[in-house]
Amino acid sequence: MNRSEPEPSGSPFEDVTLIRAGAIAGFDASATIVSTIPEAFPEAHRRAANARPAAILVSAGRVAIAGEPNVICGFAGDRPPRVIDLPDRLVMPGFINVHAHLELTSIGPQPYGGDFVGWVAMLREHWPGEGEAFAKSPDPEWFAAAAALGAEQSRAAGVQAIGDITRFDAVAEARRAGGLDGVSFIELFGMGTPWDAEALARLGEPADGFQPHAPYSAGPALFDAACASGRPVSCHLAETHDERRFIAEGDGPFLDLLQSLGKWSPDFASRYGDGLSPVRWMEPYLRRAPWLLAHCNYVSDDDIALLAETGASVAYCPIASEYFGHDNHRYREMLDAGVNVCLGTDSIVCQPANEPQPLGILPQMRRLYQRDQTDPALLLRMATAHGRQALQLDGKLTCLATAPFDPDDETDALTQVLQRQDPVQALALNEFSS
Image 1: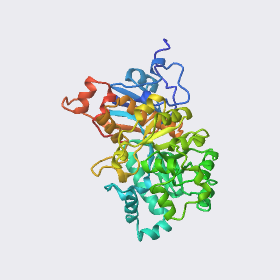
Image 2: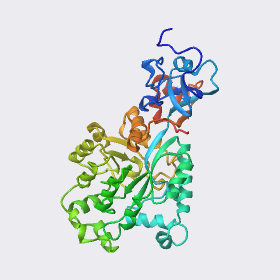
Image 3: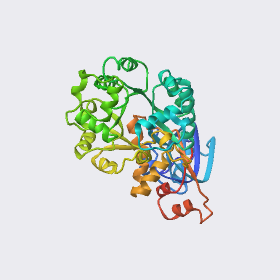
Image 4: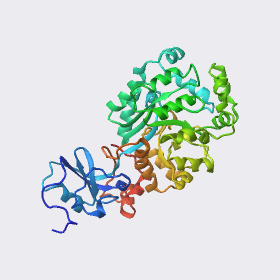
């Protein structure tokens, strides 16, 4: 037998499910998928990409191979135990949402009035009971219930894994119980002694990962300890002009806020006001661990070069950035420089009220396609492979996203695209579900 052809009978894979789909897109962006690919499997199909019609072979609950039916179906054996027919679906890898706040889901989308401090106060108004009392002694179960709702909405939008920011172990448990892979970053606050003592204690506890909130809300001791933890690390960085002013000049609204709260100490003031950008301020920490940096809205050429040199990943949240008035993000220059840019939603609060998938990644992709004409294949990599790299996931696919179309209806918008273009072009048209 020619070794480039599939075996005609028994499958070399275990616990097989065969999915026959109308089309697939983006599996070349998905680092495949099982640890051992049979030697007989054709080299040209080992990193399957896009096909119509198509087939996907699932082995032991994980996608193994995908591609043209005449190639894939032979590896399912003569009589695979399970066959799923989806002739009217475009199937893609599950999306990765690298930056979210699931614990705010129950608040829902809200308008932004241009005042960030006022916006934070608005969030507290949606907490149960008296906002200030709840802020001082929050109920983790309230946030966990909100996270469970967020996990459900994420899975419904085809999200496989998430980088979620939380203060509570109960929220991390809700994410896992909701079927979402990923990392729950424990959020840490504290600018110097004694305000960082509680956060430093948390760094000694079990957790997926840690997030010193930002350079204006978490001091050097927390960044040092996060690097030393050996776990995935993240922070908000270069998000606003006020942050840049605080780090470079040591004054401005963030200094005023810290002083008003009694949380500014001359003991660590020397770390601020040296004219550094937020990215340059982070340099000692960037060189010690692979950071996932949320936003990076305001960066220079020098900053981008440092991000690329140190292997940092950037979580770009296009809709949230526009919501807060941050324009002209340099994600394309970052990608050109070799920075691993991936996609996130931020919280549901920042999403449009009429968005049916507020915690989905496809709306973020569609926004960049419509606004910047970004290549859909690149968007798909940002939404899948880049996200897995940023969250240090193993690359195995356990979730698929699908979009319906009518292959017999030539007026169906997705059918028209699939007839004349690569399936990946369908990103601009449809909503996806898991």
